[in-house]
Structures are given as structure tokens and as C-alpha cells.
Length: 209
Image (cartoon, rainbow, N blue to C red; front, side, top):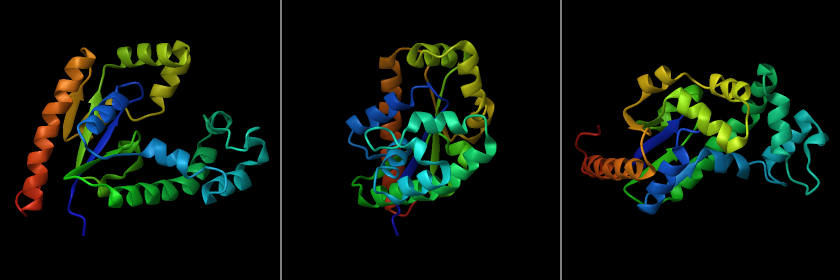
């Protein structure tokens, strides 16, 4: 049995998760990214691609033969039934892909980057939840600057995720991203040292917390 420590990295959209994940990678920590797995399982020729096209129609095949992910997001946005249908297809495939990557990863602990970890109830695969936290006003500002979204669109996207209090209540560790990038990276470095200590205790069969 793989007894390595698993850290679940999550947070609201535009909170800084990608920056944190990149820093963990720079520190030599394997980062298994759910977004990367989601793209991999719907590549042409993969079962996920075939299942999505069969369910939602050939109109979602782009000119290059790949899945038109933007069109798919537009199709399911605001439609709970369609979103649930898509999730029933993709979530098992994404979990399987991430588990394969985790099994092949090398290191004392691994980070599982799962944007919807709190919403998706994947805690069983995770030992500690790390939430990247930011105030909603900053989140909206970053989202509009990054994606060119209107304020209304940004608010709708933020509202579709778990609320900030719900995420914080689920967290074992919190990275507050209210300062500079340098400050955020320093916080990641400190957590890395903490996780190495926990992982060593886990390896020796001591306290797993």
C-alpha cells in the first residue's frame, strides 16, 4: 500500500493555485493536476472523447479533430442535468488517470491539484487539504483581468463554486494569497518543510497528522 502523504491543493478560481502548484514542482514535489488529467482523458481516440461525443453530439468536434472544450463548457454552463451527465462520464476517468500518475510519481509526498476538491467530495484520496485563499473582491478582479470577463460573468463563475467559508472550513492548511508573489512562494516553501516532516513521520509509522 502506498502510504505516502497526499496533499489536496484547491481554492477558488483565480486564487493562485497554479502559482502554488508550480512552486511545489520547482521544489521537486510531484504535482498530479486534475485539469491536466481532464484534458488527457478526452484526447481523440480516448474512451472519454468517444463517450462525450456520443452523449453531446458531433458538433463538439473542432476542426482539428479535438474536443471543442470551450463549446462544451458553454453547452453545460447553467444546466445542472447536462453538467451532471458530463461529470458521470469524466470523473471516473479523471480519478483513474490521476491514480496512475500518483502511483508512478517519485517522492516523499505528492500534491493532488483538484480545483473542485471540496465540491467533489474526493477527501477519501487525500490526507490534508491545502486551500489557497483570497478575498472575493480580489478574486473577481483577477478573473476579469485574466479572462476578459464582465463583472456579472465573473460573479456567476465564482458563485458556481463552493463559498469561501465552506472551503476554509474544509482546510487543514491555508495559504492566504493577499500579498506579493514572493510572499506566496515563501509560504509554500514553509509548507514544504512541514510536509516533509509529516511525510517522514508517516514513513516511520508515527503520527500521520
